[in-house]
Image (cartoon, rainbow, N blue to C red; front, side, top):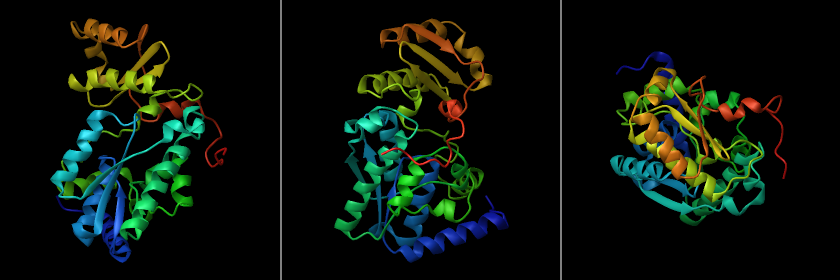
Length: 282
């Protein structure tokens, strides 16, 4: 695939910025954004100067952890898994709109400590230019802890990232956007290991049956399912409908509902108004 001139310019800017960093840690989630950052870092600096680092906690689905391992192996990237401890922070567990700030603060503090111990100069994340327009308290944590965002700094949009990923022959260039399991739990409802496990088990059912863009939103005893509008009819087909209901009831849901608006990334933020740019409570 040929890159257009605009993307080539952004790509060269990103490469040059990473070259000057010399040795980097990439906060790696196996999403397309952080995979592009990791690939460009590996190509630019070599594996000896790059470390992919992934935080492991109950909010990371087991299938995503496996994706992390598989992709790191495919890219020949050094990988370190670290246990994070955001669940022990009552400010995170309270699940207010600034929840992600505390999660990312925990992760990036750990990244910075490992960077200092192992002689890495900069920690990188996969934030792109489109992310800057959404409510993402984690961006503030990154700024406070000097985490760099080479995609954002080069002005790459999500479409740019996917185009570059395809050009670089990355296997996940079309992978749907994902977020941690806690994002399925409405603000104000406490995040618990039990609720995260329910969400993971519910979404695993849909994943195993070939759905691509979906979420199972956790409303305590009610599961609200989002799938692409084109897939809505599949949920009503038998035996899938009955199997889905039985599975969700088995893992603890009492009511099962389908969101007629369909899948939309970040729909949990639809309840927020006039909060973008506000500082998190400490």
